Amino acid sequence: MKTVKRMVKDLTEKYRETDPYKISSLLNIHVFPWDLHREINGFYKYDKRNKYIFINNNLSEELQRFVCAHELGHAVLHPRANTPFLRNSTFFSVDKLEVEANCFAVNLLLSNENLQEYETAHHILVKNGIPIHMERFLYFFNL
Image (cartoon, rainbow, N blue to C red; front, side, top):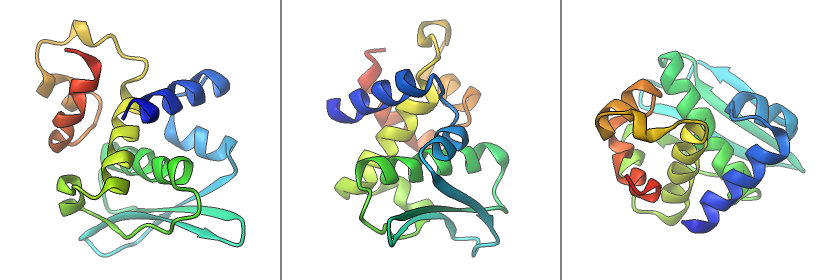
């Protein structure tokens, strides 16, 4: 996971940006809001040197932002791997690719935050629009 954290740091320093939508655009990754089935939050697709992120437009804006960060993680960490749909159950996945993408998303979305200002881990996640199930990735921040 140290590698994931380092990749997020390098990316945010290079582009001076933490917004997953803006970073995706800077990396020429096409992001599409799409009317997906309610069980599907989003997915990443690689096709003929083109990268695409599809996000369920029926989700809240906060969850769409997290899904974009998660799928951006796939695009950066696993660029040629088409990933299965991100479902609610994927948040609990132990699959290496999904764990790395979740770790990437949490690190990206919290990269500008002073976490010592928050009272609890729950407060950190809620304030930053990160699903509560991602609490396990906060231990990388030495809280």
